[in-house]
Amino acid sequence: MEKVLFVCTGNTCRSPMAEGIFNKLAKEYNIDAVAESAGLATEDNLPVSENAVIACEEIGIDISNHRARKFSDCNIDDYVSFCTMSFQHAEALINCGVPRNKIKVMTGADHGVPDPYGFGVGIYRSSRDIIKRSIEKYFQELKKQQAENNEDSQNE
Image (spheres, rainbow, N blue to C red):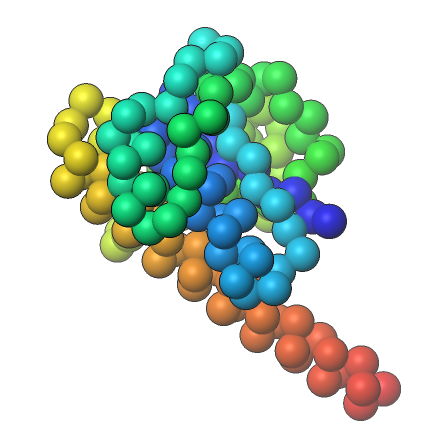
């Protein structure tokens, strides 16, 4: 099973939401992959933000048991791709030795996923929805790629 790592700053808001959403949608899309998450500037074992828990509960995802972990504790070789919440996070991963071709920046428009930390649940919902749309798009592209690869294999 392939592993994807979602990365943000503190691993208490965006990346835990992305991890939960990815794992739920992977089952729905029949994708053989699992997500984990980490933060670039976090303390280990911090609880997930209560507003992130609420935003995910509203769409049937329980992230209440999530605890923050540091990106520096992750083995880069364990993951097939790294999804970041901003271009700055992507740059930090490159500086840590992650190959550029394994990094995908999640975007809502021309920018990454806004950091909801310190704001109300409405901002968390907005970030959650951007994350969800980005993951759905990723899965649709992956399914299309798999179909094209299967078609090419059958034509050989």
